[in-house]
Image (cartoon, rainbow, N blue to C red; front, side, top):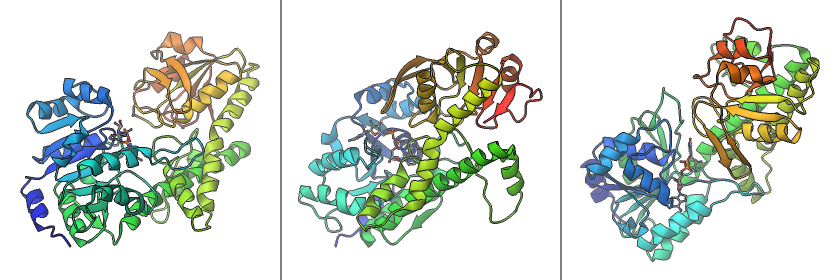
Length: 439
Ligand SMILES: NC(=O)c1ccc[n+]([C@@H]2O[C@H](COP(=O)([O-])OP(=O)(O)OC[C@H]3O[C@@H](n4cnc5c(N)ncnc54)[C@H](O)[C@@H]3O)[C@@H](O)[C@H]2O)c1
């Protein structure tokens, strides 16, 4: 059994070098947090373009401050690189690479495996490896550990190993990496001591659990909780549309209960890199135990169908005005998966645009955070956004709000549009409501 004392000492003295694999939405805030506390950080990524941009101080994620990252690069405190031969240099390595689903909606651990292979080739004694990517319980032990041990070194004996889920919420001004409590589960007591020291260096509250699997599952529970509750209000919205009841009014009324209720709001479907994906990692793993995760499946069914319901209700609303969808000009407002971010991953807007186009509508979009939608995992839309102004709004037959960005001028939208189709209750504060249909 290896002793963690020396590594903990190095971490506490900020002599430890921190390596971060994956310089995206999760990895870069971690870089920021560790450099801010005086650590030297090495950032590893396979995407050469990102490294070039980082070195040039050019942004590729809107809400992050690339200028200060560049200052850390110039000061020698942050070294972004694609050179995995240097993986032996950091004392601590955090893995924050993507964990998507493949075409058949099964976990795609390709990036986690690839990074683990890269680390394994340069692994040295006493390094601490922490997986942060969201994944099913058992991944760190069953997938990452055997790959790392190909190095000839043993977890718990030669190197430290842990799992700690990431809870980053891009665009949320109330919380950031250092103020969100961090759950940690480790392979052995030495790994736990070292991991706690790492996170206590940057985060106010570190919550230890008894195993890596418990930490892995805690993250899936958090996101399943969201997926299920969003599905619940999405289903309720569909009923409310039939009953002519305003679902948002109902939710806000229920939310005045001071205990036992937490508001979730309906929308055009689930989006982002986490909520539509993570629960299905558990569904896949549960099959190994002859177990069906029925809540997850049901929530997935409801949430996946929401873009189709939006299309139905767009058709009804246009029909009421004697307009067929075919040939109509629809201006989509907001294509990011949630408000105030520049991320279109898994955004329901992409599906809705595709469905509108298939039905013969002429679709344009405007999004203050996104100027172009190119090729994604499932779509190849190749669309350039238009600026939002009176002329653009007047020339559309309907403005369809899919993301309630704060930057949108909702008074202007209401004033200049023939018809506003609002899937987010974004127009709630607008006074003139004659041309607004909630759907
Ligand atoms: N984005 C979020 O808000 C969020 C929140 C909580 C958890 N997570 C989880 O964190 C993980 C990372 O998500 P993200 O949003 O930061 O992804 P991202 O796509 O923004 O960034 C991942 C980075 O990893 C790089 N990469 C891919 N394969 C690699 C490899 N083999 N070696 C090194 N780098 C590699 C990519 O080039 C990319 O720069 C995922 O598991 C995700 O589910 C994300």
